[in-house]
Image (tube, rainbow, N blue to C red; front, side, top):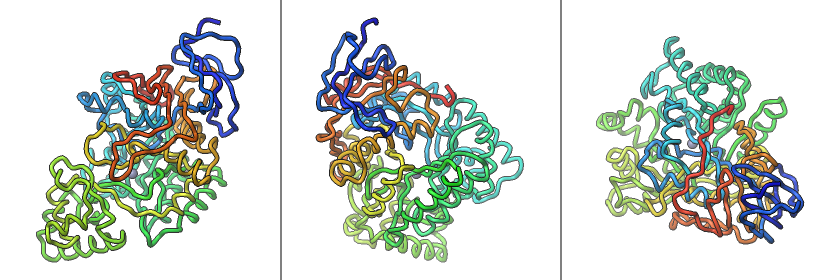
Length: 503
Ligand SMILES: [Zn+2]
């Protein structure tokens, strides 16, 4: 046998399939895993003694939003994907929640040309397709619109998209009815790929919204991925049991339905998206409607109720908005006090001045998060993306999602076994997406690997200190290249590949 590039010896190997750890050796040659198992006497350029550490496949972030940033070549720091690699993520799937670039070939070409630290695949967004042909309007598609949208989807899938994502709580995805989504999903069924959905409603209407996602899968015959499943306001806490039963029943029927989750009690989205009703924002005409006395009163009532449902403005923490840095990191309650106006007026003033301002919402219960995590059809996803260290206020999930599951939910709360948690982060999402030769530690597979200390792994990012790398992850390999060494990200290497469905 020719000399290996790396030999990792005495590791507790967890291969990603959910089976128990076993002590062994793993050899890397070029991009691939050359051998795995017992010591076979092979020699290597570099030997890593992994005594006391666990060796797992690199984590697959099935719910990622890096597509927008990776479009922009100048974001060299972001392309390094340090925040993802330092938590063990080696592959991401962007284009979630209905929003993505439309021309997939062109997009993937740009990402490949600029380089990227992690492997990168993308979904095509239903909202982006709809906006292209029908703007942000509350209208039903004509036959011609349907034809155009189907063609755009077909082309994206032919160019390598891994499926269709919908964002039914957002403009303009919210204006699509089930029938439209089924018709488009039939194109998916024909070409292959998953239907990933940020469902229509994550609060009072969550049951109907999960039912709709399942129904689309059933009618069109496509695999369904329910994005970041949660019960997102106190009035519906406890409904996770029912939601999981529905998923369970669908799986019992033979439907391929699964979901993903980030392990935090706070969500993140646009301030207007969460607090201002959709009808008031249709066509991006909120400002005009607020000038109309009658409408303005109705909008204010709706914002008041939305804030009340969340337990008030103290549970809404503003994140980065380049034009409004003075509000970054502050709660709505705090800003209202500063401005000497009430919380409703504060929200409306902010969304008028800064339509893109976003926030973190403390809205979930620990019980629901645990219940959802326990289910074998739940995978782990950041709902984040590549970030530049230190820039702006971001949700801690961008730095801590995967280590937090291993630290808080495996080691401290013991709600999952270690191998089970790793399966949710590796082989299961890889299989769902249709990734080839990734997601498991097997001879001949790509060498995407994580070496970590199960006793020392910790997420360190918090809502206050959000740019904090995780600890306890000592080595990460992407396509056989070492990118995190002894806990430090190696600078300026971009070993990720652009992935296309079916390749
Ligand atoms: Zn989403």
